[in-house]
Image 1 (cartoon, one colour):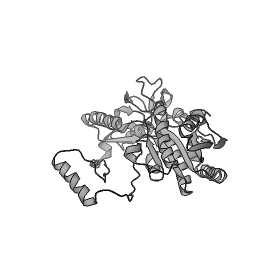
Image 2: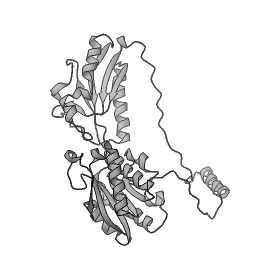
Image 3: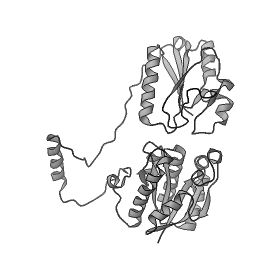
Length: 344
């Protein structure tokens, strides 16, 4: 029976929520939380012998210590395969899973994880692990675990994992395989299908890149109107527009013409970082105070009367594009010359 090591963050490891994100890693014998259900799905091929639980903040902010812990775990457990997540669209969890993947990949151990395609951990993990596509939230756990188990079972049985067949994100690697037709014949078949308007599947899909042409430089800042926009979740106390703390579906717009700083009347509702410092002084995230100072000193012409805000954590690229187009149109129509755009 193959030995499987499972990695979970503090939430799925049943330690706690955001208040336990600094939780240091510990090794627990057997299964915890999702790894227990996962065990039933791979029981014919492997056994989850240990589970590592670590806080998302701890892993990302104390990376050297976390890596050293995992290296000790490797020496103790000697796993045949490692499973991490699923992290869905949780960025810090995704990056931690990618960090786990690197440690064990470097030791020659196969790693399987699961993430939403827009999770920042995907780019860091996809070439060193099998990244199974998942939904964007833990509500999709019932779909994610079986999909990951399917890949784990194939790996443990020594079978080849195929992205389109197994629902994994392509690793960008070229593999040598045998085909009934040589390359020239396959190319002609694809060409004929294209000429006939039929569907065909390329053997070399090309990445798609967004291209944004930069705006001309502002020639005279002392006459320019500058707007403030943030994805850091700064809103008036009470969050009057009910902007979501993650996976935002909307943005807000607030009048700041008569104030010199956000102060205690504002807070953050962002669900992706420790809000303590932002709530203590929201201008740390959205520097209205500095813009108003520059306006008084005549270094910029004017601070635009409205401030725009949303949350970036887990927000889909499609929604982000829509927000940008909507806010951008308002600013352009209002004659705004430039934007200070902050995150977290």
